[in-house]
Length: 391
Ligand SMILES: NC(=O)c1ccc[n+]([C@@H]2O[C@H](COP(=O)([O-])OP(=O)(O)OC[C@H]3O[C@@H](n4cnc5c(N)ncnc54)[C@H](O)[C@@H]3O)[C@@H](O)[C@H]2O)c1
Ligand SMILES: O=C(O)[C@H](O)COP(=O)(O)O
Image (cartoon, rainbow, N blue to C red; front, side, top):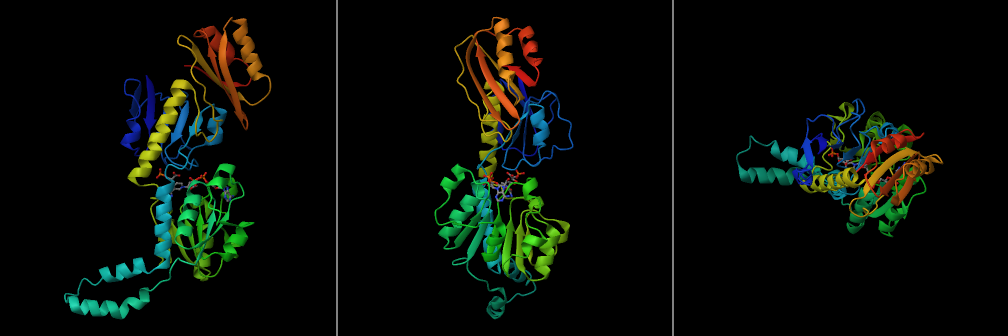
């Protein structure tokens, strides 16, 4: 029986993927084999030795100490693209809120609770509506920083609305580049993008390189009157610098998914409570995707959509065979050493795969019959081997 510990509210459709004949799934469970979570922060928690994999039902993994877990041989999965449409739609809403007097206009209309005469109210509306006038998105220029799953969808939607789109992504993958509409213009650097855009939207991960990517210095390049949208992460934007830029009327508005005390109570900030991925569809997509990935890893050792381990999949060998998986520091000679352990114990290898990613290597070896405990402990004691499983 595998045990899965959940954090946060995970879609039932995802949790139902776990066959209860083989899996116990609960928020309170001892010695779990895996975690399924959303934004719950794991940095300050002790990871039980039983945990083999952590599945983030979402995109960002900055709430998981990925480097530390990698050293322990714990695979971290996420759900790339599974909530991208939900975020795209909210960014679109953000752009519309930033271009029209929707929120102040509605707040004003809703405040007229003392009025009882409909005709008088209608007259007042017509008289006052000019203060809530806005502008249109068509013909304006949108800068998209980060052109991955979300950024590319936002770019596509903006083009469909008749906007010009400029993109900046120094780490763009070939696959993401293929997805991009050809009309997206390329900015050489962030400053070049900021200087020419009426709207700027951020879709980069929160990593060291993107910490305060938007800061006092970069904000100097912003076109006067621009609207900044941050539906990526709090850490990417220096909120104090944004406040200064808003006060100086350089930025016109900051629209984000990450309220901070210094941003509240201002008419030029709309801060939402991290609801970018909070749709039934996105929650289901993410939970289903990571549940399937986690099960395939626990039951077969296959790895898909990990942020720290290589992508690996191997068909199971014939019935009666057994599967050994192990990960090791990515140094030469480890696999050879393990194979000689198997040879020394007369264990016949049927099929195998070995892949590496950064400092970690991962191996699946199908053998003719289940290895003895002595074989497993001999593999475990090979230098640089981190974790071994027989499944
Ligand atoms: N508000 C929400 O609820 C919500 C929901 C989903 C994702 N997110 C955030 O959005 C981020 C992006 O999500 P995604 O699904 O598009 O991820 P993704 O991995 O598909 O795309 C990220 C893109 O950012 C690019 N990038 C990396 N460093 C960069 C840099 N310094 N400058 C410019 N581009 C850079 C990458 O090359 C990649 O193309 C996530 O990491 C997460 O933090 C927020
Ligand atoms: O990175 C993500 O996927 C989002 O920030 C969603 O976070 P959530 O799952 O806590 O809504």
